[in-house]
Image (tube, rainbow, N blue to C red; front, side, top):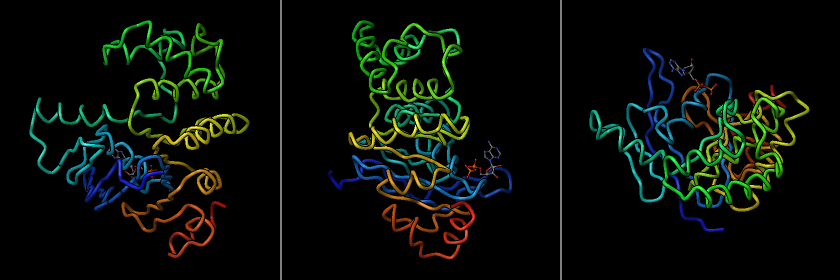
Length: 253
Ligand code: ADP
């Protein structure tokens, strides 16, 4: 594992009306590592994650992924600003709480759409890669199914494969299991665990604290728009230093 940072965020600030949701957040994700973001509901976790690929545009702060960097505080207005956000967005793949697959496309269609339409990949090559990714998430043979024919866990695994199909530098996962029935959570977490062991760089917002302790390299505890504590995953979860982290973990573990 290398220790050079692939993703760096600094000074992220975001306000919705009077609500300061991110109040100067820094994040540093070394290549090949997994960072889990944990914290109470409403603490700004999703806003932080979405800021990393400019799905939410922060008011200030910078995000760098590889050699693509955006300073949101001095983002040009209009087309130029949008292009800068799109360049940043192209560095990461996003997995949403509920998969947001295209309902009228097959599983394979969902996976090749981005690579072919957006990235201009040859359709046959994109399809071959898509099949390999489906095998990786345990869905070989389901290429021709439509999302509605799959279980929630299978749909979410397609969502993960779709994010990977874009060949991102970083995979961002926003509570990937929170919309699932409890019995389907494990199969999705197993895929994320597998990706971590393969050296994907990932940032995952999760309520699955034990999973975070087991699979992530780093855990970041966010509360009230601040990073309260960060450190090696097991240290933060099993021996939190800050009182706010301790109180949160006592409630949820
Ligand atoms: P978490 O993921 O930790 O639950 P969020 O980042 O989703 O927290 O939300 C943090 C706060 O920001 C909440 O108070 C939420 O209501 C507010 N918020 C998030 N997105 C928006 C939005 N698009 N417009 C207004 N308020 C928002």
